[in-house]
Image (cartoon, rainbow, N blue to C red; front, top):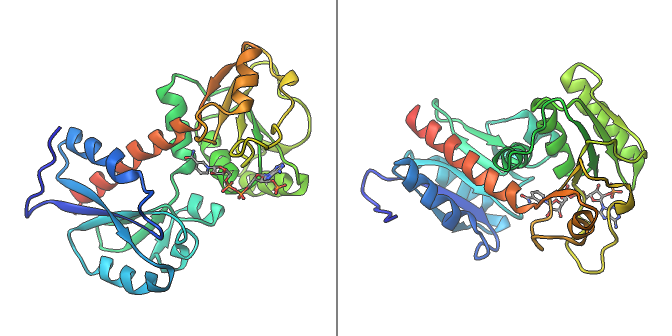
Length: 269
Ligand SMILES: NC(=O)c1ccc[n+]([C@@H]2O[C@H](COP(=O)([O-])OP(=O)(O)OC[C@H]3O[C@@H](n4cnc5c(N)ncnc54)[C@H](OP(=O)(O)O)[C@@H]3O)[C@@H](O)[C@H]2O)c1
């Protein structure tokens, strides 16, 4: 689909340093075009020491609908936003900023919502399902909040450092106002959605995040790791007849959500 840039076209940026590796522009521009949204996304090389200056410039441009944020700015952006949503606050990182109807810059984190959107696109259900979450870092926090919102029946959080799993469970339970999460070391239950939200799987030499012997048909083994597309854990799960879900879906899910979110913001202004 041809992308035509006119005087009326609104702008989305992606800020980072380096920026040449950014995949968002090529992924999101066809989505804007298919939606009929007159928005284009461009990479913006913003060095760390120029963030505040560039931020002020972005804010001063009324036809900029918002921007994606990649390394090293995700944490620093928390203090520059006029408002930050709960997920970004809990994760400690902003990955999208939207210009709201009143002109304020609001920060969001779409990691968890993108993960759940990716599951939905693959027709993997969450509502009413027991979930087993491995990890207690930023990705795990975002996913825990999103699985809770999607109606998970219970969420067991395991982690190398169990005290961090406990802290995550306590924090999310307090936000929810009910006890949906608990930390533990037990194996996943029969029909669980099992999620690897650790960084294990990026490197060939990484240990597996859990013993595949505890995976049985009826479970789904989902990953946050997108590269490699099929991690050693997913290969081991497949060998045991378990349905698998690559971390690539989390990226695809996020891109679609971000396009909808920024286009809705542009329509509201
Ligand atoms: N596909 C996507 O769209 C997407 C989006 C966001 C993130 N991610 C990926 O998600 C992964 C986690 O990111 P994050 O931001 O949550 O990182 P993080 O905050 O640094 O958390 C890392 C997690 O991995 C665990 N871990 C690290 N090394 C380990 C080891 N050797 N053995 C056992 N556990 C280990 C940590 O356990 P401890 O608490 O014990 O240290 C912690 O739970 C990264 O690989 C990132 O690339 C993917």
